[in-house]
Amino acid sequence: MKEVSSKIRNWCARGERSPAQVLRKLSDWGVVGEAQEELAALMKEDYVNVSRFAEAFIHDHIVLKNWGPAKVWSALRQVHGLDSVIIRSGIEALGRQEVEAAARRALRAWRQVRPDAPDEKALAALVRKGFEYESARGALEAMDAD
Image 1 (cartoon, one colour):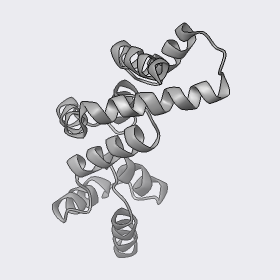
Image 2 (spheres, helix red, strand yellow; image 1 turned 120 degrees about the vertical axis):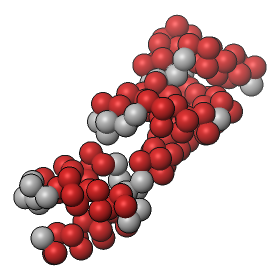
Image 3 (tube, one colour; image 1 turned 180 degrees about the vertical axis):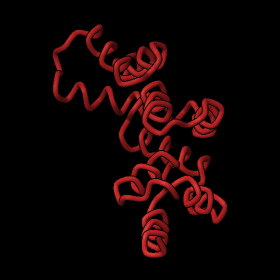
């Protein structure tokens, strides 16, 4: 167990991890019975911090991958099992301007592949990517103004 304990700490130190990811990794390594205790120790030692993970995930997926808030929300709830309050505060901390900028970047990338597609298809693509209709519409209007 000591070897796994050191190994999981090293893995957590290399990037932000959710509790669900840690439990999956421990399970992959054959640690089942002591997994919850190990996770509790990691959280106590601040190797695993749910708020910090949520903020990093939200930033990376909205700012770098141009996902919309709804898609980020879904991933954090379904895949990582995070609480809605933590997700909401993380998205609000990022700010509306970043979300709007991500919508514009996503639309620009979508339009590069489909320059002649109708606006309705562009709006639908942004909504599927997790943006609210208003954000998608704003991105479309901003692109038309350019």
